[in-house]
Length: 418
Image 1 (cartoon, rainbow, N blue to C red):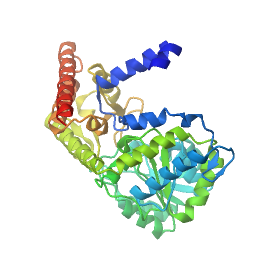
Image 2: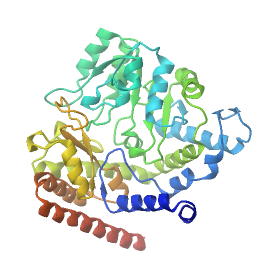
Image 3: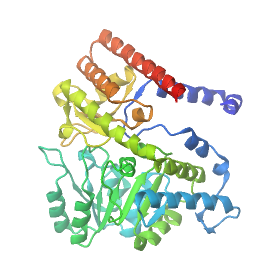
Image 4: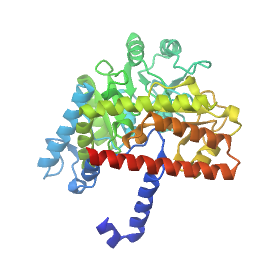
C-alpha cells in the first residue's frame, strides 16, 4: 500500500478498513470468497495497461504478443478443467456473459425458459426488471411448493407448451443438486438449445462435488469468483458449433477491450483449481455447509428444502417473525455477514424478504472446519432468537471475535509446523 498511501491516503485508509472488516468478520455470503496472493498480483499487474480489442491472433492494436499468450492459456485451462470444446474468457461478468449467449443464439422477442428469481434463479434468467426479461419472452419455472426442489416435470410441460429457443438451468439460491442432464434432455426433445449457468457451483464441479453440465450441454456460463475462487469475471464455454456466434456477440457485439489483467487472474485461478488441493477444498466446502445446516436445524431454524447439497443454505425466517433485512442487519452488527434473500413463494418484497442466504466458500478458504461451523450455526441462531436483546447481542459479538482470534492462532501454529 506504499504508493496508494502517498498518492491517495483517503482511499488507502478505506481499503485498509475494508481489509480489517473482512479479516475480523465471518464472511458467509455465498457469492464471496478470498482470492490468493497470486491472483491478486495478476489483477494488479501491468496487464491492465494493455488495450487488446479482438481475440488472440486477431487484434485491433499492436503489441499483444504476450497478452495473446496469457489469454490463450486461460482459454485452454478453462477447456481442460471443465471438459469444454470452446471457451471465451473475455466477458466482464456473469450478467453480460448470459446476455451475450441470449443475443448470439436467439432474436429479441424469442421465447427462452429460465428459473424464476423468486424461487432461486438469477436476475439474468428472465426477471422483468432485467434486460433479459425486457428483450426476450421468458417463461419462468420454479420449485415444488412442498419440497422446494426443482420440478423437472413442470419444466418439461412448459417446454412442450411454449417451445423455447433456449432453456437455461442453474441457480443463485438453490441448495440442492441440479440435474443438468435431465434439463438438457428436455431441451433437445423440443429442439431447444440447452444452457447452464454454473456461476455458484463452478468450483464444486471442478472439485467433482457436483455433477457437471459438460460436455453434453450446448452452452455453459460461469463467473470466476464464488466457489471457483478467482477474480471477478466470467467464462462462456460451448460446443464448437456455437463458438463463432458467441465470440462475435461478446466482441464486438457487447464489449470493447477485454480486461487482460483480470484474464491473467483467471488463468492463475484456473491453474490453482487444477491442483489436487482444490478438490479437498471443494469437499470441505460441502462438509462445512452440511455442518452449518445441521447446526441451524438443531437451533430450530427452518431451512428451505430442509438442508443442503452444495455450498449454500437458505433460511426461512417466517416463523421467527422477523424479516431477512432485519436478520442481515443484526448479524452484521455481530460481525457475521450474510445476505437477505427471497424464499420460494415469498409474500414479501425482495428488498425486505422472508429469508437469508448463507454460504461456506470464503470461510473454507480461511481454513474453518466442521467444528467451527457448528459453533457459527449456534451464534447465528442465538442472534436471530435474541434480535431485540442488546446485552445478548454484545455477548455474541464477543464470541465471534474470540472464535476468529482462536482460529487465527491455530492457523499460525499449523503454518509454522508445516
